[in-house]
Length: 358
Image (tube, rainbow, N blue to C red; front, side, top):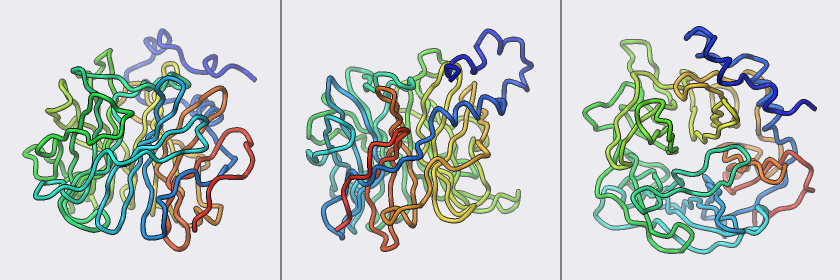
């Protein structure tokens, strides 16, 4: 097999392209990325919330020392809380405890769904989480209403001195991105959902911190129907954020496109995300970019889609890493009874195992 990097377009060659050509990733590169990241072998569920009244969702996987950690969210009927688990092999996980819990009389009282920020985004890299200002950071979906993603949601920011200990993260008193902001756009004027934050030390966009988030919005007068799309925001300090651009970067014009996870392969940025209802069910996809703004959408097969009893309804919300030559694609699996758990698919056959819904 030709090494992966041999088929990517080197940075020095990109300089010879026109500005317009650089906005699109060539088909041959997209195919090579697909061959690198595909995970045809489903191992099974690796995390469930305990009983049928609770649902596990949205994994973030990181490494510290010789151990792996997973932050994930649990919905118990009231709202989202964020939990932490630990593993030695990426397949068997032990729950440690809560790190973002319900509160009272706050803007995020009943919704705190967290996602690790500032992780090493190098493909097959360390997957360690970096600090800023002496702290580890997490963006989260927050809201006061009780219920499944109920009410008007916004993006909050939390921090801690030790991201692998079970302790409550310190949260800011108000959302950093909201549909009530003065600079609200047509694509996020209703509510805002999951976010992911990366650190770009090169400041290609003029800022060190870049956020991708999915939001629902519309502008009927300009032909923008209600849908969930992926957009961008930027920051100098992880606290003050502003929207970047006037349009979303992923938009299928109906249904849902959301839950971006960003990695970098040589000169190519890869965005894993999920789609739903612009074709049947919910499924994981990807897009590629050279500049973090213009994304070329993959037109081929889904990376993960419903096929097993435990993910027969939805297979979505990706978090994808490569470790010791194996690609692990973590995702939220939903069965026909709407039970949710976290499953993993792999690039190599590790056997069919994992947990089962009870």
